[in-house]
Length: 298
Image (cartoon, rainbow, N blue to C red):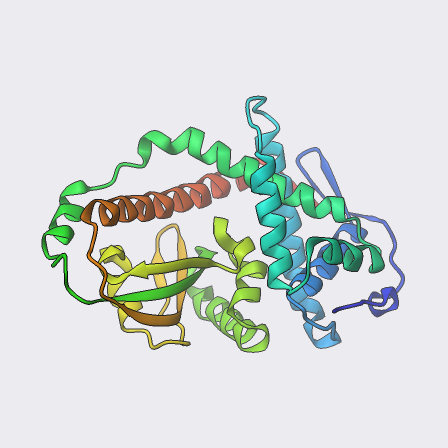
């Protein structure tokens, strides 16, 4: 369990750090975000990591501020308490403690646990907004899916893969290698799940990027070759898309001899494609907001 000394960060002055639209961000916001990152990823604080942690913390609080500004425009957005509870349980599980114990850790480190809940609610409302805006654009090419299904043998032995992902925002080509090296170094340092919780912009980042068990035939053709060629415990080669960068890890692999339910596989393929499309629309929507909402550093 991680307990952080305030002295590790020097004397905290609650000065104005930046404004995002009409929202003020202070130096203590950045410090609190760094503490949160360290607790949820079980990392110790070191001076060597200070610059990187500051960069991640600033990016996250600015991103949340922009998402808050956007979601506050829509009175119809509501979050489900069950979704909030599930996310809290998932976060606590990643740290191997109960939600109550996690709350105690935050309070011991001078952090308001209610802010964790507010951060989760921001993401839940953002996801609801993205679905409401882009639901009519989530059209899946069913001819491609039917072609994929036509190759199935209902009774054949299939491979299943336990997969997790990290989704990154797109970067300029000249910065790509630096970005990928940063991610790989963090994975080597703290593991894939905690890196996903820290860096990934995917909706499943709060679950350590976990996608779950997927049957080989239910993997989207866009990602299938990369996943199938990735050994268990290793990282896939990055998949570079216009809207972002995806890195998979294959956590486990097993044989399945159950009778294949083609309708179930079809629904799984459609859901996977729609989720990926929605994630990319979400990234694109966010990027368009960054060009409209002023971020001024003090």
